[in-house]
Image (cartoon, rainbow over all chains, first blue to last red; front, side, top):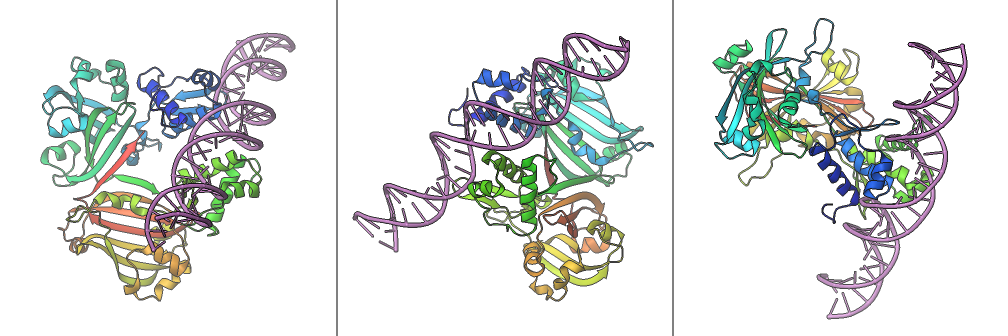
Length: 239
Length: 239
DNA sequence: CTTGTAAATTCATATATATGAATAGATGAA
DNA sequence: TTCATCTATTCATATATATGAATTTACAAG
């Protein structure tokens, strides 16, 4: 299977992870039952459960007593966005709308190439997107994607991009986003950015750079989101 | 022990957690061996291990093959501070020095009372502290503590406060900090704050509000740290 | 069609046990 | 003293197994 020096439960985990990454086990569907898997792998239930538990811990699977174990659809509500807490008049959480304003092909600069693991100058798809709530722009986003994986995006009408991009990536390009890392910093708004965000130039803005990765940890998308620092809140627990 | 409807491993976990909170099992020391604990609780090893594993997961214990299982001393390097990455000329990480500049008793305002779970107007110990690296002020901190728990701090010479406060709390007041939650936001520097941080007034500053809690989750300390937003970086992983 | 019940499926909890690996402590030789 | 070695301790890994709880499915009764 893999490196025999590793404990059995880790090798099981790796194998199952590979199945998810390969799309063999699709998000939202159930994996085989414990009985089937123990038979297939030839291991004891305890060992299998331990492997599955690590995947549940990592948020890749969800177990449900009496129903089965399911591949979880990754949920980016857990990202920094959740801290905006924009609510409508009924007090409900609101997901900002997303609209692609600019779309073209370009060659990757140093930063983008590094983030996506490409050579400098490689062809990338570039998107510019605004995220709004009640017509007000909350975030301005720049997005870069490897053309070799995301070429279909170049032929689609920008108006046909859905509200959310990740399901769109999956349908159009067969690219599954499984995880991401985000880096947050503070900058000051340029004139152009200030206009877009309806704030004054020189006001502080939050810059979130996200590298989104597939289930096999390949970087697939590099995204820079810029928004008004004023309403921004972020909370973290330390143990 | 506790609520009999809960699974056994959870009741074990709760019991062990209580021992830590009570100081019965002190940070840095080893807990009894698996053999002793299974005998004491009258459970199987597997059940005990499962209980211990949840505590390890939560960062309260550390297991070491061949040595034993130890109560972990909470590590606040994991806090937002770690993202400053201040390094000296050798490339080593540097912990900022901490010096208490102001210390007095006052009555809690609304915000402080809420954070500490006290009545508004209750007596609190107030500290003001600067955190520096190479003589440069990185952060300015305001700290509020319940006088009933931290009265000894009022009689100590401010110069005798150590570089780190939490060990000092433990020695002087018998108050153990086990966890904390931090909330980050961006503001602009007042004239006074700008002077303290050696930046221009109106420049963006990072404000970190921390509520530090005991092992039993009682809020013990409320702290507001303010620093230059310029060098600030924060990174988060999403799954 | 709806409702209630029974059976089957599937994960959750718990025990018992065996072998291996890492560490610490004791012992003895150089 | 210093170093290597042996031994006991302690956690890590793995198996086998039994009972319980939640859910789904099938089916019969109304």
